[in-house]
Length: 357
Image (cartoon, rainbow, N blue to C red; front, side, top):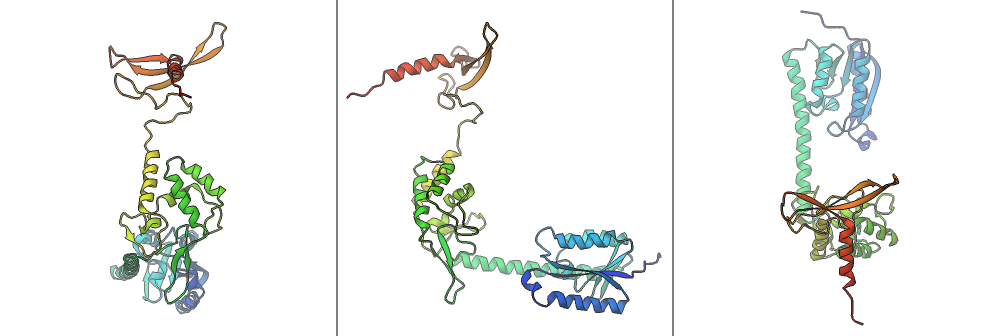
């Protein structure tokens, strides 16, 4: 059996999940225990990595930096953590770590579990590692379940669990953590936004321009003017008429806060939004006069428009726009009519229209 490489140098990885934990004693305690471990084992601690990041969310950039440092070292490095869950809380990192162990780039040392994983570790030693990863993953899953149950309970009780939308404000006080009230400064403009958009006379960009004329600002962040996505979010948020959905879910929960608009007004705005999304044609670069307006009497399909370039006798270019329809004699045959001919007919119709004094 090949001999295990001798390890003389080590790096320490101590981790907390948030700034709040970092400000306590957690990292300091981990570092102290790892230093004592290195002294007992005769290992030279050459670098300490202090990670303030979640082990389950994001790309774990700080973790990857520590692993790259160990991998790029000329000698095999002992990667020491206080516990397995300080290194990982799931199996997504196991493949990477196991690959480096097999290549004898690193060894894994877990102080509290008294477990060392190297290339020649027994199946029982690897089982201890994997079992501790399973328990760490189970702990995370259990926390997630508790959070989800808490969220569901709050929603069923009519309480909102996220940031209040524009037109409402969070307030603190009393025995409860806080509540949501009407923002008296902004609520008139929110009502007006719904009322004017429901007429169908304005697009979202036009409503955006109106909110800037009204000087309607966001109630969060830098409290600057609203953007286009804000307008769309407001017009599609049922919170304003008395119900709420969480994470774009289909299920709606009645809330306990004062509504700003009626459901009928909200439905009117929804109908207008859907109407704008149902264009019967695709706009091109050229804005043709009859585009999307007239249909072929033979087939009932929309008449198309296209422009052709022609040359005059003197060599100069000019353009003619043709309307494409289908022949009465052969509905499968497309025919083209000069747009100018149709314009003259429409002009005669308009001339025949007048109002009595």
